[in-house]
Length: 174
Image (tube, rainbow, N blue to C red; front, side, top):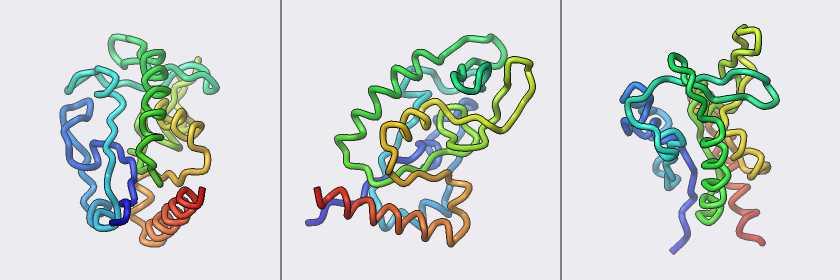
């Protein structure tokens, strides 16, 4: 029996109530389009690092080259814990032979582009990258990654699935 194509996914996209507000972001379009082709490997960095549900919302702040993950109201800094967790989690994911990852857009832990970021002057930009996503992409530089919001475009979805399949073929040639 063939080993299934495994794709990591931000757990909230599967409908699990892991978001800061206790809710989810079930993406039924994505799940229906890819679900029959892949085995999902859910990851919620914020819950897995030990933060509860619900929890105080967080954002990226400070220096864009060394962003901090800080709660909005109380100012608690979770950067070191998240970075330590991310380094460990990517090594665990390596053993699962993922062929791609679908991240939650705009998330301070999972967004891969255009994540809200507040610079040292307190000005908001869309230049951030989620802390977990950054570590993941550095650890797996060639693995196909995408945000769920882009995969609602049928051509982007098709391209992602093609890249995932090509990556998987390369994995199994080694």
